[in-house]
Amino acid sequence: MATIEKRNNSYRFIVSCGYDMTGKQIRKTMTWKPEPNMTTKQIEKEVQRQATLFEERCLKGQVLDENIRFAEFAEIWLKDRKNDLRPRTYARYESLIPRINAAIGHIKLCKIQPPHLRAFYANLAESGVRLDTKYTCNISMDDYLRENELTTAALCRRSGISNTTMISIRKGNNVNQQNAEKLAAALEMPLSELFTPVGEGHKTLSGKTIQHYHRLISVILNTAVEWGVLFSNPCERTKTPKAEEKEAKYIDEVQADALISAIETADELHRTIVRLLLFTGMRRGEALGLKWSDIDFKKGTLKICRTIQFLPKRGIFEDKPKNKSSERVIRLPQTTLDDLRAHQVAQMEQRLSLGSYWKGTEDYVFTNPEGKPLKPDSVSSWFSKFMKQHPEIPFITLHSLRHTNATLQLAAGVPITTVSKRLGHSNTATTGRVYAHAIQSADDTAAEKIEDIFSKQKTKAAV
Image (cartoon, rainbow, N blue to C red; front, top):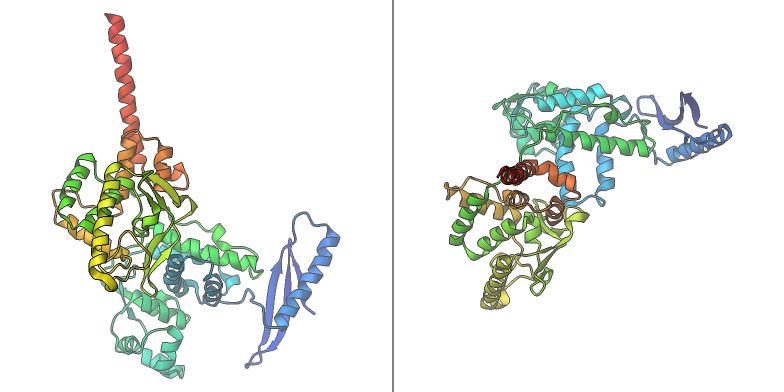
């Protein structure tokens, strides 16, 4: 029978699951907290039921307890959530976890406290912690392998590091951040204890990036609470650095006109994409995910209902828009409709000239010469090269076309609700936060106009 311990307003269940190879008793624990509206009798009955269920799960090997280490639980969590997460979100979490594991992966869930997290965030904010920093190992890997009776192959399997990289570490060569974190997690040692950063020590992570790590840890530990593994989430009691708000980069009306003139020298495909992004404020992936069936030339509208994304392990793939509000229908200016009609003709001519060599099957608006969807980064790279060839225009990225579109709309007096809807923002607060500079500019203009109106009335009264 499970042992029951009352701890303030919660109960702790302890079940013995035999002994390990060293003769140490294996104990599984679970914390249960009654609902606030439960009576004393209801609590007593439910405590016994929960304890019995917990014991049954322990005996069947179905239980995780608070003594599980963070790295092990994070791995279980990521596998459990894989089918629920969007591909890019899963890939981002997968890339963040190694660094988290290097810091707290060796700590049992029940032992993780705010000081551990604050120390981790402080370390992230220090110089030399970016992934492009190189690290040198502080211990002799040959001695470690010999003392722990490990082979290089075994450590490679445990850490996920290639044999070539492991040999390089054994020789004392520098290693990148990702591999350093993998090895630290495998050896259950803090990264700062096992490795020393070398090279460019001035590079730091932004407050926004550190918050990404905090949110992921919090989501993982919240799941531990939901599963009854933890009683509370220490992230809720931990402050993180503030994310500095960076002003969206954009070009003004005169510079936008210069860009429109310059883009006329570009090839038809990229010219159409750039003009579409500038005139609509669409996201890059949304534009590349367009199909001809999404465009209503009679009504002059465009439906946004998918995006094109790319991941190294998956290649180019189709995905849903960023959020529900991103699925929208927007009206197009006549010049954009003309651009798209001309592009449709050009694409049809290309398709007819290739005949059976045309590989397109999804009827995408923008494709490579064979009809397949474009890789998003290739379009961004092309635009960056184009901008460098035109130093008379301030350098901007492809995403800056979206910011430019929004800024020019707001400066022209378009209501923020309309701008927000066209951009696919979930609410006007997002639009107001990102484009505060444009709203302030429009407000200044409004104040000047009001002053002009009353100045004229005052002049008339004086006459």
